[in-house]
Image (spheres, rainbow, N blue to C red):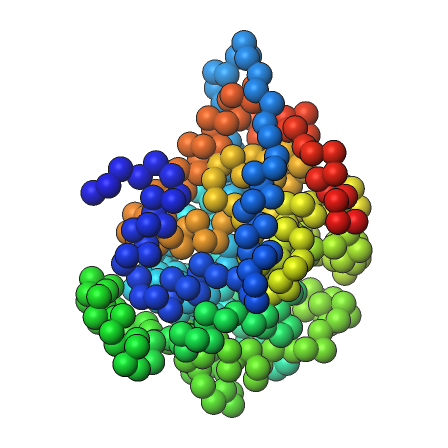
Length: 387
């Protein structure tokens, strides 16, 4: 077993183990992938202020996200197709998050259903929904999430239509994978993955198959998007969704200060500053670059989280120091899931926690609540370069 000290170690194992179409699904952006690349590289522009001779005894990364106590301000982001990265992947990830003490967010486009995950966990998890045309299906999704005791609803607002992801189209992404000469050749090199998949019955979109009416191709994310997603979404529609859920509502996909203000106005409890991991509007600014402007616009009037580009505990610290109250990791935990199943997700969380704790100490802080811009050295034009 290789020594795993960073997320990149898990990524290397993941790439060897998982079929190409599912690796590419996670590790790709839209169009030229400029935003996908910027999400990570813009974190690198932020430097940290080292402080010394500060009492570091009794440090804690504990915090709260959406009214929930967390071991560190990191949630597992909603990622579709986790059950194709590893058999029963959503269950494995949810278990790892529960044991570690951080929120897990189940995607509508999961392989394991809401009920599957609820039956294999003991604590509430978050559930993510898209903005769909079918009110009846949406209401039933909300009701199923409520019956499963989900503690927060995450509404994705940046996917009315899907950005073009060249690799997904070329690979013929589907769940389960469609057998073509090209895919068969690749699957033949992923024997451990295939043997795992043969031992589970969960190979389709569990929240859709048997629940949604009139879906002609439930194996295809692209077909489902074209048929079911609502391109006419507006803020009144989001307000309506908010009225259907009596718990915390988090709007994911906010990337503009004006939209952050509108999210506050429609009654959201929290927002996630996100560009969908660079998978929607290529050429949009990175999440971390937009965070300062959004914080200036809404301050502490609404809880702000950040995702897209986080690959380390240092990235988490930088987001918190710029004002976010929490973060979400997607690819970082997927690497662990594909590499080692539940143990890999746990290892990803351990790596990020260790990096966050150590970096916090070297910056002279004992609590995440004390982090702020005083811990950072920012380029003068970091948040205004493209204004």
